[in-house]
Length: 477
Image 1 (cartoon, rainbow, N blue to C red):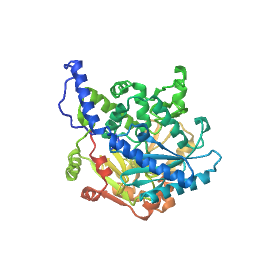
Image 2: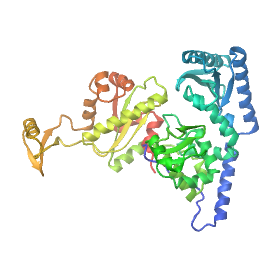
Image 3: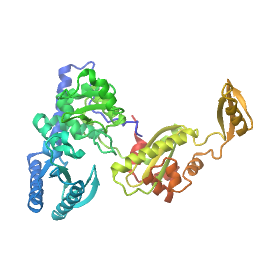
Protein backbone atom coordinates (compact mmCIF):
# COMPACT_ATOMS: atom_id res chain seq x y z
CA UNK A 1 0.00 0.00 0.00
CA UNK A 2 1.79 3.11 -1.18
CA UNK A 3 0.89 5.37 1.71
CA UNK A 4 1.75 2.94 4.51
CA UNK A 5 5.14 2.15 6.00
CA UNK A 6 6.40 -0.85 7.94
CA UNK A 7 7.68 -0.44 11.45
CA UNK A 8 11.20 -1.75 11.90
CA UNK A 9 12.14 -4.03 14.76
CA UNK A 10 14.10 -1.77 17.06
CA UNK A 11 16.52 -3.18 19.59
CA UNK A 12 18.05 -1.59 22.69
CA UNK A 13 15.83 1.51 22.73
CA UNK A 14 17.18 4.63 24.40
CA UNK A 15 15.18 7.51 25.80
CA UNK A 16 16.48 10.66 24.10
CA UNK A 17 14.73 12.82 26.68
CA UNK A 18 16.64 11.38 29.66
CA UNK A 19 19.83 10.00 28.12
CA UNK A 20 22.82 12.41 28.08
CA UNK A 21 23.69 13.71 24.63
CA UNK A 22 27.23 12.34 24.71
CA UNK A 23 25.87 8.82 25.30
CA UNK A 24 23.41 9.19 22.42
CA UNK A 25 26.22 10.29 20.13
CA UNK A 26 28.35 7.36 21.26
CA UNK A 27 25.50 4.95 20.55
CA UNK A 28 25.01 6.45 17.09
CA UNK A 29 28.76 6.25 16.36
CA UNK A 30 28.77 2.58 17.42
CA UNK A 31 25.82 1.87 15.12
CA UNK A 32 27.49 3.64 12.19
CA UNK A 33 30.80 1.85 12.77
CA UNK A 34 29.06 -1.51 12.92
CA UNK A 35 27.11 -0.80 9.74
CA UNK A 36 30.19 0.41 7.87
CA UNK A 37 32.11 -2.77 8.70
CA UNK A 38 29.50 -4.62 6.67
CA UNK A 39 28.78 -2.18 3.86
CA UNK A 40 32.22 -0.66 3.15
CA UNK A 41 33.87 -2.60 0.28
CA UNK A 42 37.31 -4.00 0.98
CA UNK A 43 40.39 -3.45 -1.16
CA UNK A 44 39.96 -6.79 -2.92
CA UNK A 45 36.46 -5.88 -4.11
CA UNK A 46 37.57 -2.43 -5.28
CA UNK A 47 40.44 -3.95 -7.27
CA UNK A 48 38.15 -6.63 -8.71
CA UNK A 49 35.73 -3.98 -9.99
CA UNK A 50 38.55 -1.96 -11.52
CA UNK A 51 40.10 -4.99 -13.23
CA UNK A 52 36.78 -5.99 -14.79
CA UNK A 53 36.27 -2.48 -16.11
CA UNK A 54 39.85 -2.27 -17.39
CA UNK A 55 39.37 -5.48 -19.38
CA UNK A 56 36.17 -4.17 -20.97
CA UNK A 57 37.63 -0.73 -21.66
CA UNK A 58 40.71 -2.26 -23.32
CA UNK A 59 38.56 -4.52 -25.51
CA UNK A 60 36.34 -1.62 -26.66
CA UNK A 61 39.38 0.54 -27.40
CA UNK A 62 41.15 -2.14 -29.42
CA UNK A 63 38.14 -3.39 -31.38
CA UNK A 64 36.17 -0.19 -31.95
CA UNK A 65 38.70 2.60 -31.38
CA UNK A 66 36.29 4.26 -28.93
CA UNK A 67 36.99 5.54 -25.43
CA UNK A 68 35.08 4.09 -22.49
CA UNK A 69 34.87 5.57 -19.00
CA UNK A 70 33.51 4.18 -15.75
CA UNK A 71 30.66 6.15 -14.18
CA UNK A 72 28.29 5.59 -11.29
CA UNK A 73 28.98 4.71 -7.67
CA UNK A 74 31.92 2.41 -8.39
CA UNK A 75 33.76 5.23 -10.17
CA UNK A 76 33.01 7.58 -7.26
CA UNK A 77 33.77 4.96 -4.58
CA UNK A 78 30.36 5.44 -2.97
CA UNK A 79 29.10 1.92 -3.67
CA UNK A 80 28.03 -0.56 -1.00
CA UNK A 81 29.93 -3.84 -0.62
CA UNK A 82 28.43 -6.46 -2.91
CA UNK A 83 26.92 -3.95 -5.35
CA UNK A 84 28.91 -4.84 -8.45
CA UNK A 85 27.41 -2.25 -10.82
CA UNK A 86 29.64 -1.19 -13.67
CA UNK A 87 28.14 1.77 -15.53
CA UNK A 88 30.34 2.04 -18.59
CA UNK A 89 29.91 4.98 -20.97
CA UNK A 90 31.22 4.94 -24.53
CA UNK A 91 31.70 8.34 -26.13
CA UNK A 92 30.96 9.55 -29.64
CA UNK A 93 31.85 12.90 -31.25
CA UNK A 94 29.02 15.47 -31.25
CA UNK A 95 28.98 15.26 -35.04
CA UNK A 96 27.73 11.66 -34.86
CA UNK A 97 24.15 11.26 -36.06
CA UNK A 98 21.74 9.95 -33.44
CA UNK A 99 20.86 6.89 -35.53
CA UNK A 100 24.55 6.02 -35.88
CA UNK A 101 25.14 6.45 -32.14
CA UNK A 102 22.21 4.16 -31.35
CA UNK A 103 23.13 1.42 -33.84
CA UNK A 104 26.85 1.42 -33.09
CA UNK A 105 26.24 1.81 -29.35
CA UNK A 106 24.10 -1.34 -29.31
CA UNK A 107 26.60 -3.20 -31.48
CA UNK A 108 29.44 -2.40 -29.09
CA UNK A 109 27.34 -3.36 -26.07
CA UNK A 110 26.21 -6.68 -27.55
CA UNK A 111 29.78 -7.48 -28.65
CA UNK A 112 31.10 -6.81 -25.14
CA UNK A 113 28.60 -9.16 -23.54
CA UNK A 114 29.34 -11.84 -26.12
CA UNK A 115 33.12 -11.44 -25.67
CA UNK A 116 32.96 -11.78 -21.88
CA UNK A 117 30.35 -14.55 -21.82
CA UNK A 118 27.56 -12.43 -20.37
CA UNK A 119 23.83 -12.19 -20.93
CA UNK A 120 22.16 -8.95 -21.90
CA UNK A 121 18.99 -7.13 -22.86
CA UNK A 122 18.32 -3.88 -24.65
CA UNK A 123 16.95 -1.18 -22.36
CA UNK A 124 15.93 2.38 -23.07
CA UNK A 125 16.67 5.82 -21.65
CA UNK A 126 16.67 8.67 -24.15
CA UNK A 127 18.19 6.15 -26.55
CA UNK A 128 18.71 2.36 -26.34
CA UNK A 129 21.62 0.77 -24.48
CA UNK A 130 22.66 -2.71 -23.38
CA UNK A 131 22.58 -3.99 -19.81
CA UNK A 132 23.07 -7.42 -18.31
CA UNK A 133 25.34 -9.74 -16.34
CA UNK A 134 28.99 -10.61 -16.85
CA UNK A 135 29.88 -13.11 -14.15
CA UNK A 136 28.91 -11.49 -10.85
CA UNK A 137 28.88 -7.98 -12.33
CA UNK A 138 25.83 -5.97 -13.39
CA UNK A 139 27.05 -4.13 -16.47
CA UNK A 140 25.58 -1.30 -18.54
CA UNK A 141 27.14 -0.09 -21.79
CA UNK A 142 25.72 3.38 -22.42
CA UNK A 143 26.46 5.44 -25.56
CA UNK A 144 26.79 9.18 -25.04
CA UNK A 145 28.09 12.28 -26.76
CA UNK A 146 31.47 13.68 -25.73
CA UNK A 147 30.57 17.29 -24.93
CA UNK A 148 32.56 19.99 -23.15
CA UNK A 149 29.70 21.61 -21.22
CA UNK A 150 26.19 20.73 -20.01
CA UNK A 151 25.03 23.73 -22.01
CA UNK A 152 25.80 21.64 -25.10
CA UNK A 153 23.69 18.63 -24.08
CA UNK A 154 22.63 16.39 -26.94
CA UNK A 155 21.02 13.72 -24.77
CA UNK A 156 20.14 13.37 -21.08
CA UNK A 157 22.91 10.85 -20.37
CA UNK A 158 25.54 13.34 -21.55
CA UNK A 159 25.38 14.94 -18.09
CA UNK A 160 26.70 11.85 -16.32
CA UNK A 161 30.45 12.51 -16.79
CA UNK A 162 29.94 15.98 -15.31
CA UNK A 163 28.15 14.46 -12.32
CA UNK A 164 30.99 12.01 -11.76
CA UNK A 165 33.63 14.73 -12.06
CA UNK A 166 31.77 17.03 -9.64
CA UNK A 167 31.43 14.36 -6.96
CA UNK A 168 35.04 13.21 -7.31
CA UNK A 169 36.26 16.78 -6.90
CA UNK A 170 34.08 17.70 -3.91
CA UNK A 171 33.02 14.63 -1.91
CA UNK A 172 35.39 13.64 0.90
CA UNK A 173 33.18 11.48 3.16
CA UNK A 174 32.14 8.54 0.97
CA UNK A 175 31.23 6.46 4.01
CA UNK A 176 28.40 8.84 4.89
CA UNK A 177 26.99 8.28 1.40
CA UNK A 178 27.17 4.52 1.99
CA UNK A 179 25.29 4.89 5.27
CA UNK A 180 22.63 6.99 3.55
CA UNK A 181 22.21 4.53 0.68
CA UNK A 182 21.95 1.53 3.02
CA UNK A 183 19.47 3.38 5.23
CA UNK A 184 17.39 4.23 2.15
CA UNK A 185 17.50 0.67 0.84
CA UNK A 186 16.29 -0.64 4.18
CA UNK A 187 13.29 1.71 4.23
CA UNK A 188 12.54 1.11 0.52
CA UNK A 189 13.17 4.57 -0.88
CA UNK A 190 16.39 4.05 -2.86
CA UNK A 191 16.33 4.05 -6.65
CA UNK A 192 15.39 6.70 -9.21
CA UNK A 193 13.89 4.33 -11.77
CA UNK A 194 10.24 4.93 -12.63
CA UNK A 195 9.24 1.76 -10.81
CA UNK A 196 10.72 2.93 -7.48
CA UNK A 197 10.45 6.76 -7.81
CA UNK A 198 12.94 7.17 -4.99
CA UNK A 199 16.35 8.77 -4.39
CA UNK A 200 19.15 8.36 -6.94
CA UNK A 201 22.74 7.62 -5.99
CA UNK A 202 23.78 11.03 -7.32
CA UNK A 203 21.13 12.73 -5.18
CA UNK A 204 22.43 10.87 -2.11
CA UNK A 205 25.95 12.10 -2.82
CA UNK A 206 24.80 15.68 -3.25
CA UNK A 207 22.73 15.63 -0.07
CA UNK A 208 25.77 14.52 1.91
CA UNK A 209 27.79 17.26 0.23
CA UNK A 210 25.12 19.78 1.22
CA UNK A 211 24.62 18.64 4.82
CA UNK A 212 28.13 17.45 5.61
CA UNK A 213 27.29 14.14 7.29
CA UNK A 214 24.59 11.49 7.28
CA UNK A 215 23.55 12.43 10.80
CA UNK A 216 23.24 16.11 9.88
CA UNK A 217 21.08 15.17 6.88
CA UNK A 218 18.64 13.29 9.13
CA UNK A 219 18.33 16.40 11.29
CA UNK A 220 17.92 18.75 8.31
CA UNK A 221 15.20 16.53 6.85
CA UNK A 222 12.96 17.18 9.86
CA UNK A 223 12.82 20.87 8.89
CA UNK A 224 12.12 20.40 5.18
CA UNK A 225 9.00 21.96 3.76
CA UNK A 226 7.17 21.00 0.59
CA UNK A 227 9.40 21.79 -2.41
CA UNK A 228 12.41 22.39 -0.18
CA UNK A 229 15.17 23.89 -2.32
CA UNK A 230 18.81 22.86 -1.99
CA UNK A 231 21.31 24.68 -4.18
CA UNK A 232 24.98 23.91 -3.48
CA UNK A 233 26.36 26.27 -6.10
CA UNK A 234 23.91 29.08 -5.27
CA UNK A 235 22.70 29.09 -8.86
CA UNK A 236 19.60 31.00 -7.76
CA UNK A 237 19.09 33.93 -5.40
CA UNK A 238 16.65 33.56 -2.49
CA UNK A 239 14.21 35.95 -4.15
CA UNK A 240 14.11 33.62 -7.16
CA UNK A 241 13.02 30.57 -5.16
CA UNK A 242 9.31 31.11 -5.83
CA UNK A 243 9.91 31.00 -9.56
CA UNK A 244 12.13 27.92 -9.09
CA UNK A 245 9.26 26.15 -7.33
CA UNK A 246 6.95 27.06 -10.19
CA UNK A 247 9.56 25.87 -12.69
CA UNK A 248 9.69 22.48 -10.95
CA UNK A 249 5.97 22.28 -10.26
CA UNK A 250 4.68 19.17 -8.45
CA UNK A 251 8.22 18.01 -7.60
CA UNK A 252 8.21 17.69 -3.78
CA UNK A 253 11.97 18.12 -3.29
CA UNK A 254 14.18 20.40 -5.39
CA UNK A 255 17.93 19.86 -5.53
CA UNK A 256 19.51 22.04 -8.19
CA UNK A 257 22.02 20.08 -10.24
CA UNK A 258 25.36 21.81 -9.59
CA UNK A 259 26.37 21.03 -13.18
CA UNK A 260 23.11 22.25 -14.75
CA UNK A 261 20.93 24.86 -13.01
CA UNK A 262 17.93 23.97 -15.17
CA UNK A 263 17.70 20.44 -13.80
CA UNK A 264 16.21 19.14 -10.54
CA UNK A 265 18.20 16.08 -9.46
CA UNK A 266 15.17 14.95 -7.41
CA UNK A 267 12.69 15.27 -10.28
CA UNK A 268 11.67 11.58 -10.17
CA UNK A 269 11.24 11.46 -6.38
CA UNK A 270 7.61 10.87 -5.40
CA UNK A 271 5.82 12.39 -2.42
CA UNK A 272 5.37 9.06 -0.65
CA UNK A 273 9.07 8.12 -0.93
CA UNK A 274 10.08 11.55 0.36
CA UNK A 275 7.58 11.18 3.21
CA UNK A 276 8.97 7.74 4.13
CA UNK A 277 12.51 9.12 4.28
CA UNK A 278 11.58 12.07 6.50
CA UNK A 279 9.48 9.81 8.74
CA UNK A 280 12.16 7.17 9.27
CA UNK A 281 14.90 9.79 9.59
CA UNK A 282 12.94 11.19 12.52
CA UNK A 283 12.35 7.75 14.01
CA UNK A 284 16.06 6.94 13.85
CA UNK A 285 16.89 10.19 15.65
CA UNK A 286 14.33 9.35 18.34
CA UNK A 287 15.60 5.81 18.79
CA UNK A 288 18.87 4.97 17.00
CA UNK A 289 19.10 1.31 16.03
CA UNK A 290 21.16 -0.92 13.74
CA UNK A 291 17.82 -2.27 12.45
CA UNK A 292 17.55 0.79 10.20
CA UNK A 293 20.48 -0.62 8.23
CA UNK A 294 19.82 -4.35 8.46
CA UNK A 295 16.10 -4.96 8.71
CA UNK A 296 15.16 -8.50 9.66
CA UNK A 297 12.56 -9.73 7.20
CA UNK A 298 9.93 -11.81 8.94
CA UNK A 299 8.27 -14.53 6.84
CA UNK A 300 4.80 -13.38 5.82
CA UNK A 301 1.83 -15.52 6.81
CA UNK A 302 -0.33 -14.82 3.77
CA UNK A 303 -3.42 -16.45 5.26
CA UNK A 304 -3.10 -14.33 8.37
CA UNK A 305 -2.82 -11.21 6.20
CA UNK A 306 -6.13 -12.10 4.55
CA UNK A 307 -7.72 -12.95 7.92
CA UNK A 308 -6.73 -9.54 9.21
CA UNK A 309 -8.79 -7.95 6.43
CA UNK A 310 -11.83 -9.87 7.63
CA UNK A 311 -11.20 -8.69 11.18
CA UNK A 312 -10.89 -5.12 9.90
CA UNK A 313 -14.14 -5.44 8.02
CA UNK A 314 -12.49 -4.69 4.68
CA UNK A 315 -12.32 -6.49 1.36
CA UNK A 316 -9.42 -7.08 -1.04
CA UNK A 317 -9.69 -7.48 -4.79
CA UNK A 318 -6.96 -7.75 -7.43
CA UNK A 319 -7.18 -7.29 -11.19
CA UNK A 320 -4.51 -9.50 -12.77
CA UNK A 321 -3.42 -9.99 -16.36
CA UNK A 322 -0.39 -11.12 -18.34
CA UNK A 323 2.57 -8.79 -18.00
CA UNK A 324 3.14 -6.87 -21.25
CA UNK A 325 6.59 -7.13 -22.80
CA UNK A 326 7.71 -3.77 -21.43
CA UNK A 327 10.66 -2.57 -19.40
CA UNK A 328 9.91 -1.46 -15.83
CA UNK A 329 10.36 2.24 -16.61
CA UNK A 330 7.44 2.01 -19.06
CA UNK A 331 5.32 -0.62 -17.29
CA UNK A 332 5.08 0.90 -13.81
CA UNK A 333 4.02 4.42 -14.83
CA UNK A 334 1.31 2.79 -16.96
CA UNK A 335 0.23 0.57 -14.05
CA UNK A 336 -0.05 3.66 -11.85
CA UNK A 337 -2.16 5.46 -14.48
CA UNK A 338 -4.36 2.37 -14.75
CA UNK A 339 -4.67 2.16 -10.97
CA UNK A 340 -5.75 5.81 -10.73
CA UNK A 341 -8.28 5.33 -13.55
CA UNK A 342 -9.90 2.35 -11.82
CA UNK A 343 -9.82 4.18 -8.49
CA UNK A 344 -11.70 7.13 -10.01
CA UNK A 345 -14.20 4.79 -11.67
CA UNK A 346 -14.94 2.82 -8.50
CA UNK A 347 -15.15 5.96 -6.40
CA UNK A 348 -17.60 7.46 -8.88
CA UNK A 349 -19.69 4.30 -8.61
CA UNK A 350 -19.91 4.72 -4.83
CA UNK A 351 -17.21 2.38 -3.52
CA UNK A 352 -14.99 3.47 -0.63
CA UNK A 353 -11.33 2.57 -1.28
CA UNK A 354 -8.96 2.52 1.68
CA UNK A 355 -5.75 1.69 -0.17
CA UNK A 356 -4.51 0.64 -3.58
CA UNK A 357 -1.23 -0.43 -5.19
CA UNK A 358 0.26 -1.96 -8.33
CA UNK A 359 2.49 -4.99 -8.90
CA UNK A 360 4.43 -6.08 -11.96
CA UNK A 361 6.70 -8.98 -11.03
CA UNK A 362 5.45 -12.52 -11.74
CA UNK A 363 1.73 -11.73 -11.79
CA UNK A 364 0.90 -8.26 -13.09
CA UNK A 365 -1.95 -6.03 -12.01
CA UNK A 366 -3.43 -3.67 -9.45
CA UNK A 367 -5.10 -4.29 -6.12
CA UNK A 368 -7.54 -2.48 -3.83
CA UNK A 369 -8.70 -2.64 -0.24
CA UNK A 370 -12.35 -1.57 -0.09
CA UNK A 371 -14.77 -0.82 2.69
CA UNK A 372 -17.82 -2.03 0.76
CA UNK A 373 -18.48 -4.73 -1.81
CA UNK A 374 -21.85 -3.37 -2.92
CA UNK A 375 -23.50 0.00 -3.46
CA UNK A 376 -27.22 0.96 -3.27
CA UNK A 377 -29.32 -0.16 -6.22
CA UNK A 378 -30.32 3.43 -6.88
CA UNK A 379 -28.06 6.41 -7.57
CA UNK A 380 -29.00 9.98 -6.73
CA UNK A 381 -28.77 12.36 -9.69
CA UNK A 382 -28.31 16.06 -8.88
CA UNK A 383 -29.86 18.31 -11.49
CA UNK A 384 -29.96 22.02 -12.28
CA UNK A 385 -30.98 24.80 -9.94
CA UNK A 386 -34.50 26.20 -10.24
CA UNK A 387 -32.74 29.45 -11.11
CA UNK A 388 -30.97 27.91 -14.11
CA UNK A 389 -32.40 28.40 -17.64
CA UNK A 390 -35.75 26.65 -18.18
CA UNK A 391 -34.24 24.64 -21.03
CA UNK A 392 -31.84 22.93 -18.60
CA UNK A 393 -34.66 22.17 -16.17
CA UNK A 394 -36.85 20.75 -18.92
CA UNK A 395 -34.05 18.49 -20.16
CA UNK A 396 -33.56 17.06 -16.67
CA UNK A 397 -37.30 16.66 -16.18
CA UNK A 398 -37.65 14.79 -19.50
CA UNK A 399 -34.79 12.44 -18.64
CA UNK A 400 -36.06 11.29 -15.23
CA UNK A 401 -39.51 10.22 -14.02
CA UNK A 402 -39.66 11.21 -10.37
CA UNK A 403 -38.27 14.63 -9.52
CA UNK A 404 -37.93 16.33 -6.13
CA UNK A 405 -36.10 19.33 -4.73
CA UNK A 406 -33.25 19.57 -2.24
CA UNK A 407 -32.93 23.28 -1.62
CA UNK A 408 -33.09 24.88 -5.05
CA UNK A 409 -31.70 21.79 -6.84
CA UNK A 410 -33.74 19.33 -8.87
CA UNK A 411 -32.99 15.77 -7.78
CA UNK A 412 -33.89 12.36 -9.22
CA UNK A 413 -32.78 8.79 -8.82
CA UNK A 414 -31.85 6.13 -11.33
CA UNK A 415 -31.57 2.38 -10.94
CA UNK A 416 -28.04 1.08 -11.36
CA UNK A 417 -27.33 -1.68 -13.86
CA UNK A 418 -24.60 -3.05 -11.59
CA UNK A 419 -24.27 -2.67 -7.85
CA UNK A 420 -21.68 -5.24 -6.68
CA UNK A 421 -17.95 -4.79 -7.17
CA UNK A 422 -17.43 -7.78 -9.46
CA UNK A 423 -20.18 -6.89 -11.93
CA UNK A 424 -19.16 -3.20 -11.88
CA UNK A 425 -15.61 -4.12 -12.84
CA UNK A 426 -16.77 -6.65 -15.43
CA UNK A 427 -18.86 -3.92 -17.04
CA UNK A 428 -15.82 -1.65 -17.18
CA UNK A 429 -13.67 -4.29 -18.89
CA UNK A 430 -16.38 -5.32 -21.33
CA UNK A 431 -14.98 -4.21 -24.68
CA UNK A 432 -12.14 -4.43 -27.14
CA UNK A 433 -8.76 -2.67 -27.02
CA UNK A 434 -10.16 0.57 -28.40
CA UNK A 435 -13.06 0.59 -25.97
CA UNK A 436 -10.70 0.12 -23.02
CA UNK A 437 -8.33 2.79 -24.33
CA UNK A 438 -11.29 5.17 -24.70
CA UNK A 439 -12.05 4.54 -21.02
CA UNK A 440 -8.56 5.70 -20.06
CA UNK A 441 -6.69 2.39 -19.88
CA UNK A 442 -3.08 2.79 -21.15
CA UNK A 443 -2.74 1.24 -24.60
CA UNK A 444 -0.16 -1.44 -23.71
CA UNK A 445 -2.27 -2.66 -20.79
CA UNK A 446 -5.49 -2.48 -22.81
CA UNK A 447 -4.03 -5.01 -25.26
CA UNK A 448 -3.51 -7.59 -22.50
CA UNK A 449 -6.75 -6.83 -20.64
CA UNK A 450 -8.78 -7.25 -23.84
CA UNK A 451 -7.29 -10.72 -24.31
CA UNK A 452 -7.74 -11.97 -20.77
CA UNK A 453 -7.90 -10.74 -17.18
CA UNK A 454 -8.93 -12.09 -13.79
CA UNK A 455 -10.79 -10.52 -10.89
CA UNK A 456 -9.31 -12.21 -7.83
CA UNK A 457 -10.79 -12.08 -4.34
CA UNK A 458 -11.00 -14.03 -1.10
CA UNK A 459 -8.92 -17.21 -0.80
CA UNK A 460 -8.06 -17.06 -4.49
CA UNK A 461 -5.69 -14.20 -3.63
CA UNK A 462 -3.37 -16.88 -2.22
CA UNK A 463 -2.69 -17.96 -5.82
CA UNK A 464 -1.01 -14.63 -6.58
CA UNK A 465 2.74 -15.24 -6.45
CA UNK A 466 3.92 -11.65 -6.81
CA UNK A 467 6.10 -10.48 -3.92
CA UNK A 468 5.07 -6.92 -4.75
CA UNK A 469 1.40 -7.83 -4.30
CA UNK A 470 1.97 -9.26 -0.82
CA UNK A 471 4.37 -6.52 0.13
CA UNK A 472 1.78 -3.92 -0.80
CA UNK A 473 -0.98 -5.77 1.00
CA UNK A 474 0.91 -6.26 4.24
CA UNK A 475 2.53 -2.81 4.71
CA UNK A 476 1.45 -0.93 7.77
CA UNK A 477 3.03 1.77 9.95
